Image (cartoon, rainbow, N blue to C red; front, top):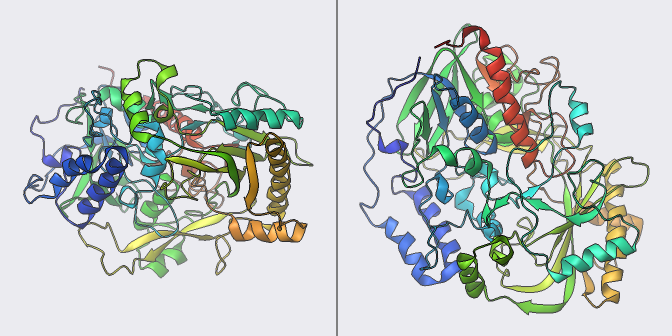
Length: 607
């Protein structure tokens, strides 16, 4: 039976509509900073007009009479894929709920970069080079301590570095899941430009005996040095949201062009409703104006949580699903004791080595941006059509059989965990990041009470917010275990050999960090422990497993002990993949949609 919705749309369904309050001011101010970077004070004036009284529509509470066959929580990469694929079946009524607002132009984003040349009305989310700035804008993230979690349609896919690195087949074999594949679903491109220092880096690696690889994603192509592929298309960020949701949204209004698909922005899920028979019956939400509502599932419907490895366990715990002692401590009622909710959280811990650049130069960003808007083909998009990076390497440490170290060269200090992006217009330092791909360390997500006195009750779904801590209680977050440190220390030695080759060619100067005085094994290990930082590649906090004592979902992504509830995002990945995780998350979401269709075959409508 085909779905039908009322043609009357609440303002709550329109992207970008928010009441003018503390959070909206932060959002607009953050984008204003981005636009100031792009084009000066005139750009800011357009955004700041939104702050005038009466600029936003008055929002009336929305009363939903419809029920949905699929409610997808979270409009990041996974949610975008799941929602689109499920709505391909015209009989299925699909609702996608996102706490943030519209981002890229094709997703209804309205904050176009002010320029008469910007005929496509591209936003900062669209322009690949702006990724560091977006990643450093607090108003585009959840206000959580110590973690960087995107809050906008597209999720982390609108602020990551766009590197496309597939999971290795051996990664999927560890999951012990049948019929899973590492094939790609999002358009990729080779680097838009290769700066001289990138080519010199690759050449130096080859001189040291590191093999040159043409494609890190090719069979047997992971080990070696080469150039990354990126999730870009025609000089624009090709996020999963843009690739999957873009074709089914009206870019002018941001509204769905499908009668059976609805998108709610600026809407936070506060709880999954679970009845006394342990069946998910819907979700409780809070709209941007503070109104709360219950949205119900139809018969045989499913709630699919795709809120990411930090927010997914948060939502599960707020819904009464988690370790009974943890929930009791947080003052939350228990629906189902699931001891592994929030556990097994993994990341790729990383350190950054910094070197002087021997040929420092300034970049005319205004001129480069104008050239970008004038570009007609991939060879002319220039700096703004790139992530500002292109080269990297995957290394096999002694005793290993597969790469366990990933190097990435940043020709400018633009790694967002290391820099606030203030110096993107000049190149004075070169950064090489060293990421550990298969760490022993495990963390967990717990809920803590938000003690921020400025919290607005209407803007925060609850005073309980997630925090990352060690799996071992009462200890600091485990970025690294002792058994991992030597691998990074070994990689520092390799980078120093590469740097020596670059120094011979007068490409770089002295080592700024860790510095030549950090030389002994003990000093290196101590430096690694003191300087390691998070990479925001979170996975595993609601992992797939055979039993509820080992994980949170089964191999069909169903939450143990709860009917009509699944998880389909990075949190289900039991072991972190070998490289950047975005492509693996897209794969998980694609497979989730296939699984759900297979499982529902017995009651799927035939007409």
